[in-house]
Image 1: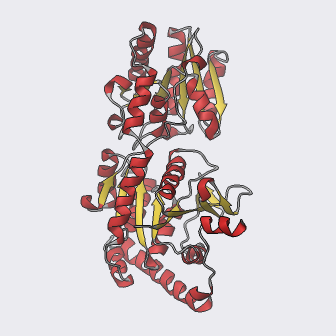
Image 2: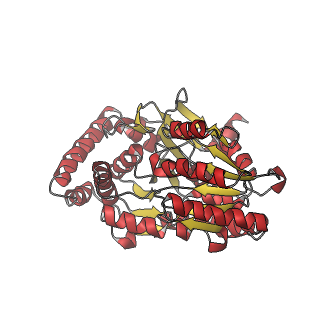
Image 3: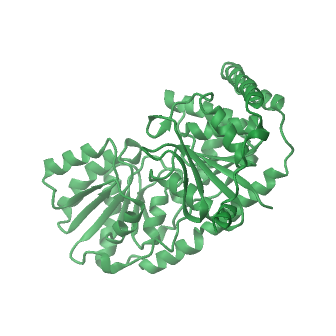
Length: 435
C-alpha cells in the first residue's frame, strides 16, 4: 500500500538535532520503500520556498517568522491557506507531526484533520507537569492527540509520560525507538589521541541538557586526571558558563569548545573520543549516545527518562543527575580504558547496527500508516466533540478556534477551488520530464 506523507515540524535542516535527523532519515527510508514524502517546516535565514534533498525529498520552507528557539508563533490562521494549498497540491493522505514543542506540527495536524486527512504524531521528548510552560504544552498536546489517529513515542518511558500528560488511551500509542545510520557512524581508533583520554560531549548548551552539571564536573575530573581532555560540541545560552569555568580554572589546554557542528563534523568529532558524556536532566531517548556507541565510545550518562532502555550495561555507565555520581561514573569509565577492559569499539558498533536499524524503524512506521489508512474517516462534527471534551475551559475555546478555521477553509474552497490548484508531479516524473 503506497502512502503520500507530509512530515511537519519546526525542527529540520539546516538546524541540527535528534528530531531533525529522525525526520530526514525516516523520510529517506520511506521513499526507498516506495512512498511519497514531503516535509513542511519554516524558513531558515534565506532558505525560503521549495528545496529538493537526497532522493528527491521535497521540502517546503514556509515564510513564517520564528518566535523562540526555532518555533513559530502559534496562530492557526496564518498558516491555514498555505497548508491547504500544500496538502491539495501534493495530494497528501497522512500528516505526520513531530515534537510536542513544535507549533507547526500541531497546526499541520489540526488543519489536516479538518481537511479529512489521517494524522500521526511522534513525541520525541519528556515534559513535566508543574510549571506554566509544561501545563500549556501538555494541554495543546492533549488537544492535538485527541484528534490524531495514532501516536508514536521513542521509548516506553516516553509513552508513559505522553499517556499521562495528554490523556491519550495507551492502546493508541506505539513505541518505535530512534535509530542511527551505522554506515556513517563507524569506529576508527586511529583518530584517537594515544597520549590522553578524550571525553566528548555533544548537545545543545541549554539547561535541560545538564550543562550546569557538566560545568561543575569538568574542573573536578581535570584535577584528578592530568591526561584527560574535554571536547565539547554545540551551542546555546549555557556556553558562556563553560567559557567562564574554563577561564577561571585555567583549562584552555584541557577543554575545547567547538561551537555548533555541521552534521558531517559530528562523526569526525566522535572518532576523536574515548568516552562520551551525557549530562541531560531529561531525555525520552537520546540519539547522541547511540551515535557515540556506534563509533565505539564508552558512554557515561545520567540515568534519566528513557536512557536506561537504550544501551546494555556493558556499553553504558549510568549515574544519578548530580556531580558526585557523574564523577564516580567517569572514574569507572576512565579506569576501564586504562585497564583495557571496556567493550571493543567494533562490538559496540555491531550491537547498534543489529538493534537500531532505520529500515526496521521505517517498516514499523509503515505498519502504522497501513492501520490508520483503514480507519473510517472522522467527520468535522466528531472532531469538534473530541476537542470539546478536553476541558471545561480549553475545550470550548479550541472548539471556537477550530470552527473558525473550518469556516475559513470553506471560504478558501470558494475563493480558490481545489480543482484550480495545480497538482505537483512526483519527483521521478519531474526527472523524466527533464530528460
